[in-house]
Length: 144
Image (cartoon, one colour):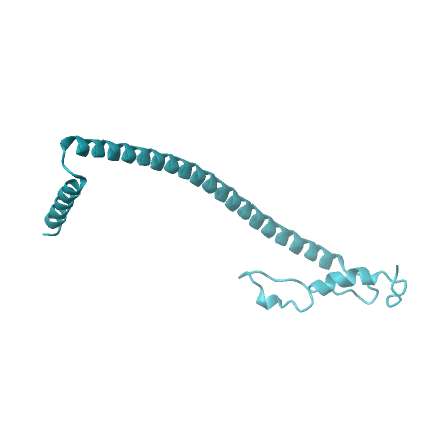
């Protein structure tokens, strides 16, 4: 469907391309030393010169190279993040196993200690008092 505003002309197809760069200030380029964009305006017959077109194409190629480098950098970062997550998951699994083994050992040690306390005939309060005394002795030695 053709718009009546442009008539039979095909200039409206390139008009959107030039609108993309309207308002772009080449002196305010984001990269230092970057020449910025050239303005692309057609001549009186609505044609663009070959030098303008080749300049625009070279600018597009430079921008595509920059974007490709950024995409490659992002891909490398995501690969490294994936490796870190995988390694962290593996480490957390081994840490969980270690904690489980430690819990089982402490449980066994507690059971043996309670059996020893029952066999000795001394009450559990006496053992708690003894271990509290030893703990306080170590704290006193450590502090003073």
